[in-house]
Length: 209
Image (tube, rainbow, N blue to C red; front, side, top):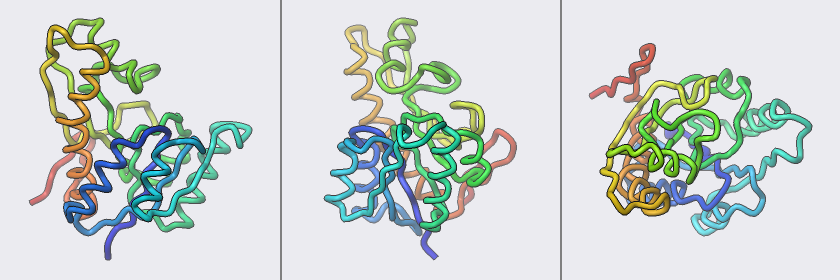
């Protein structure tokens, strides 16, 4: 039985597009993206879903009195859609523990740095690359990890590094990390999950043959 995948988005949806393209090429084995859920009604990612004929939904933070109320509504929608895997692809809302309790080791997130560096509160989007350049690191990259109750702290599935170049701006670094790391690693992690080849043991994620 193919696993049902929901992708959570807030903005442009470049990682969503990478997943859609991988699915079109037949690279996501035993899984299918059946829903795109946005926290922002104006997210361009919703256009990408429409073009790909994938059902889309909006669960906006401002429609709920608290983060917890929004999280519960989101969990209810995911369960109604019988989702097996949740992928956070540039989802800019911090969810409350109800989400992780409903989907233990079944939520994948892409983070645009090598966790534990430049992770946690305030480290999202372009800010991550600004901090990396400010710090003067020579390598940065992307991390695919399972989501736990602590922000950016769940078990790591994949990491890939790129060189930071002397004349990099946050934008050029962001683009290189997306193209060389995020867009390659995320579809692979999703496919391995759907093939039941990711085994979580404490903080370790083993890839089964």
